[in-house]
Image (cartoon, rainbow, N blue to C red):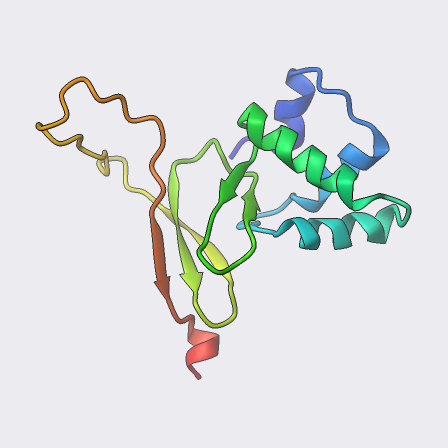
Amino acid sequence: MDDLLQRLERRDWRLTPQRRAVVDALRGENVHLSADEVLDRVRDELPETSRATVYNTLNELVEMGEVGELHVAGRSRKYDPNVTDRHHHALCESCGMVQDIQLRSDDEPQVPASMPGFELRRLDVLFSGICASCAN
């Protein structure tokens, strides 16, 4: 996976201390945070950071295509910095944990023959269930 910070530096995106803190909050494997979770992490580093700054930065990153936005019914949106590796997601209905599910290279979606010329731009698959921790 290409690192979010590296991708943003290649774009010459202006990294203010607040933006850098948002990017740092999204670092790691299997990161799927709500905006409030990002805000909490940012405020650990920069307590004076406003909610609007975090939300605006996340929105800008989504618009740039550098962060994915997961819409899960009944839950806060989650932000995923892994936009370079094609994958699906698994959601625990109890605790809200989200995990990446990697695709095999032959898992190409097929557009139905009844939709000739349809250009598939995005595919979101969410598997929903109960994780092992919550099941116990």
